[in-house]
Length: 222
Image 1 (tube, rainbow, N blue to C red):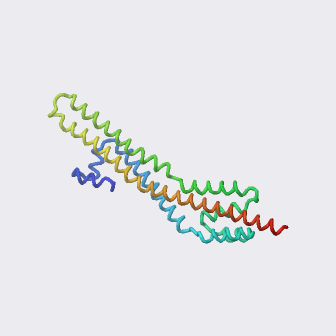
Image 2 (spheres, helix red, strand yellow):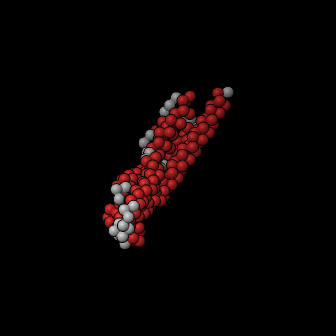
Image 3 (cartoon, rainbow, N blue to C red):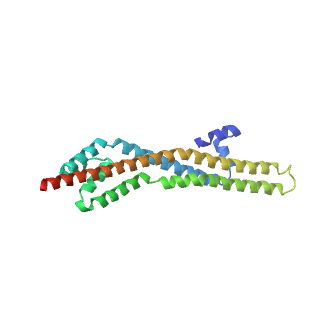
């Protein structure tokens, strides 16, 4: 309800009065806002945890060990880590050599799914909120025109203003939820892109390390 306070101030109504005057459509709008806030809080907690377990230096050390042919040492170094790049490398290096490329892709997809979890729900909430507000607008205007059709405008003044108020409140609340939801949605997407970039860099670095190891092994075999 904090997002509704500016509107309540302008209209001289408390948040509860605003909610009641918004009509029945305010209940699904409230549900959408609750779901959006829940998703945002869960994703923030997830990203905080992931950021606290990042160990880029460890992943770099693992790749150096791979280049030196010390696969077991790289696995021993990375296994205890909670860093998502290190987890991908551990899974990849624990597979047969000819299956490591597909193993890396599979592990990377699993990690990216963890980062993307909940975002489709948040996206749906951002899209649905203004549409529900629009539906409230239509319902409010229908009530207004219904009151106008009763003939005695003076006697129906309360119904007319109530219908207009319902239309404006529902639209405003839906737009406020969508606008406020866009900020965390874009921030979360930016963080996902960073994770994707980190994984892509690790993939390229692993390919380079593997090729250097193969070249060194070929020279040693001559």
